[in-house]
Image (cartoon, rainbow, N blue to C red; front, side, top):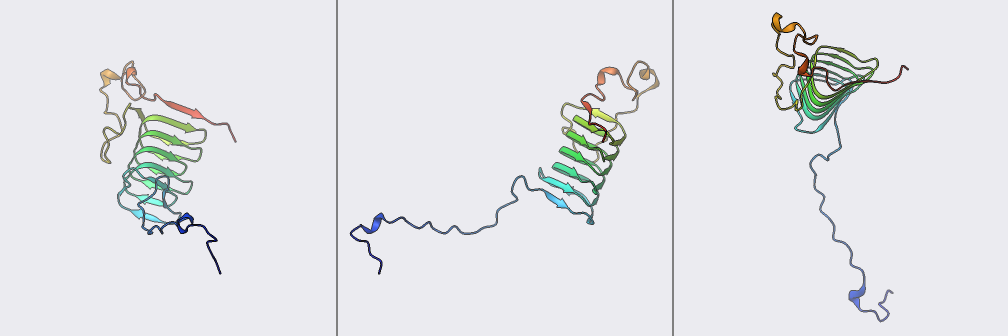
Amino acid sequence: MFTNKGRPADSMPAMPEPVPQRRQPSRPGIASIIANGVKITGTIDADGAEIQVDGEIEGNVRGGSLTVGDTGMVKGDVVSESVTVHGRVEGSVRARKVVLARNAHVLGDIVHQSLSVEMGAVFEGQCRYLQDPLSQSGPGTPAAPPAASPASSFGGSVFGEPRDDRMMSGVVVTGASS
């Protein structure tokens, strides 16, 4: 029925060998999602992974990138490369890049290298610029500056520290009223 019609058998294209299916580790760019309605109690250590929180976390969070969605809430300290807040965070935030979106509500101190606060965001706490905010990482590391003595409060910042401490450096307020 089928013939080579004079062609050598080895000139036919070879079929590719089947590749065995194996489970691959988590792919970069895929977020771990804590869905709306899900509540987690305890520490989350994501070891550099991306986390999207639309539910509630009661405990400290450490990861590569954290996004708290509109319905999300974190009650605990956050240490991450970057943090974007649309929902609510009650605890200190320590990250290289922090973005507070217009619906954000943060109750706690922020230690950052870059901080962006959109119009409408609520932030109750102190913020401090550090060139490497993750160098003193750890959930128990206080984000608030040490209390200043009365003698050093004259001529200093509103937080009672000298002006050259660069508190508030890197703060950007953006957005138009909507």
